[in-house]
Image (cartoon, rainbow, N blue to C red; front, side, top):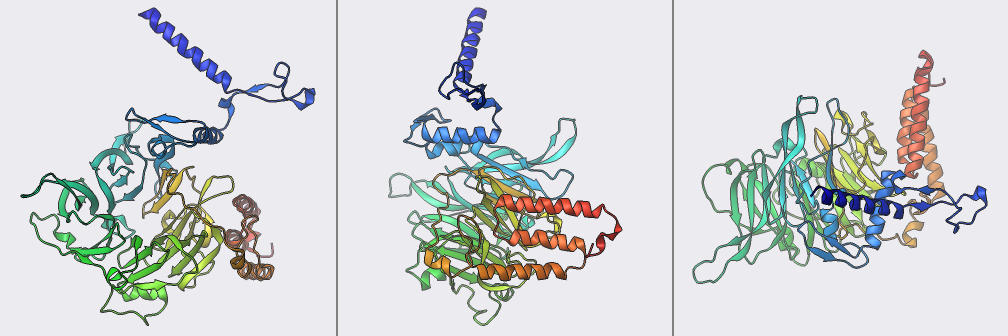
Length: 567
């Protein structure tokens, strides 16, 4: 037995050595004057192990998507693929999925990774609640990631986020909680799921019916369940309204919206009652519309149709004034009347904050609207916008998120790396690296994972979801030449403005803003902000920001005369 085990180890080591030899690359030496094809006398071999991890990852992705023809799945089966890998590979691959977070307070302000459920088939979406985090995968399994007290390597007891997980339920389609940005209000979790119902008298066999199950976010205990008729099939759920009048909006597969109202304060009481499911007014008044997705907050709802149209419901006069700048068309007796937003192109996805919103069209353009008191629209000023206004220096985002008074954009640079941009209020560390905030989108000081696809920010923490879905990547169209000519939008190749007169006027305005600053520190801060406004490449912006930081540090150490703007 000992000889057999040694022989197996030797064979395994031999195979590893052969594989390493096969992964070596020949490099020619021009100084020796040898030909590249001469392997006996040419160059020095370089092992792949010397490559940076990022390059190894890119090579791994390239080889997998072009060469591999089959793949062993975690269940033990084999799924064959054509020229690329199947979707199941990316769903189950631990290198392309993960939940990352960075706390705004405390001593350690670095990016951390949560526990990874090994049985999860990718991460479709996530939601942080008051105490924990919930993740839904692509096969309908909802995972419950718990915060807990754990022992560190030094033997100390510390509080750690999302360090343990359990399976909350299976067969889930979607889930939602209190739509406010503050997770303190997220007491319950509403799960839209499919369940097998037993056969009734006169029928044979069971039927699959959609239902809404309500769980306590603190313990994962189910406290309420409502089941719908088997003829109704839903795909999305959102919440709107106060706790006592919580409205559940359900989107069907046919694009119709139904709603029902529950009293959330009575869900934990052991009693049963009947709720009425009614067709929402947007589907009654506009029956020809087919809604594709929804977004909501406490007092408003946004609908995107399959044709890219956008319709709004606003339920309070204060939010209506912040979004549209007037109360002229607000009807206090009819809060469900849909309002159409005028946009020049088809909208792909959106983000809805408390009193501002962001839209992304099919050409990758970002439009912001609403309250701009803290600069959360990223337009470079603090003037409210009553209609969608384009942010010209940003295009083709991966994800967009709007919070209480700040906004975040996840984008991809020219070298295929990811970066996180933010604007608005920076209090509490919600814009890492910019404590005073910014009226334009600036690069945040945070490391973004390679496969990051969505994000969310709470009062205490910033979350980023990493998951590669080959079927849900946003595909943007190129802007037609007729639309580019009349607008000062950045060109796709160089990132410079097409309108030179507009560029000159903008530069003059930038100089006047710098001149109006009283101190050198204020001028440096204003210059950093202006660099964020300008349509530069990511590497160029990083260069200017780093150079300005060096100059600012050198000026601050030169003496007390730095407060003079002429120094």
